[in-house]
Image 1 (cartoon, rainbow, N blue to C red):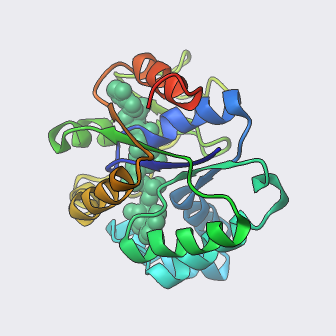
Image 2: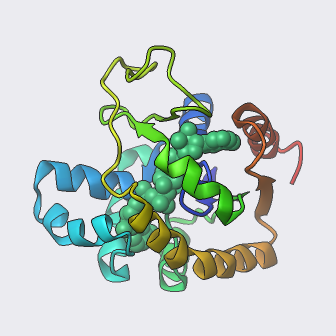
Length: 217
Ligand code: AP5
Ligand code: MG
């Protein structure tokens, strides 16, 4: 399975990706997580991207494409992968087609989590994430069992530095039209499944599971 997750910031991609990768045993490749890890480690990539991340703007295509191409060449991607947050632009989608056709592995499923923009701000400003394993929580909609502590690995939860109302507004604006263009691109190819992302987390996941098991398209 070569899966692409589409959805606006806060649509629930990361939340659902955690369950998908656990059940289907494929790597979760999230460009946002990779950029944040590089910034936290102070690598040259981290230095290059930090200004974009904090402002909520997209990192330039050339750089983003290079990072994903390198990652897709790794051994663990041979049996499939889940891309979360890539592609976000037409040049990124075209580059993905090129690299996957070279590997003889086309995109098999595109999951589009549809959530209205008005819902996203509340989701993102209440989000808390695990800096260690990447799990995502929400103070009201999806709280951890023990306040401030990750259920999966016990690390202390943090708030992402780009989860401020100003950066969130820029992120939604940056992605609104671009996501729609990609939705149409993959719909025309017959690989898109649109899922109502405003349903409870478990309901969304059971629809994703049905799709990936081939029970629905
Ligand atoms: P990235 O990390 O990808 O952020 P994003 O797209 O803004 O998406 P989020 O991670 O905010 O949302 P999500 O859909 O994962 O939601 P989550 O599951 O956490 O990118 C960050 C930055 O990196 C970008 O701004 C850009 O600078 C750069 N970047 C990354 N990729 C790039 C690319 N390809 N090109 C260029 N630049 C790139 O859920 C959100 C909250 O809602 C959580 O609190 C969760 O608990 C809650 N929630 C989830 N599902 C539900 C539900 N069903 N009901 C109620 N609450 C829910
Ligand atoms: Mg995410």
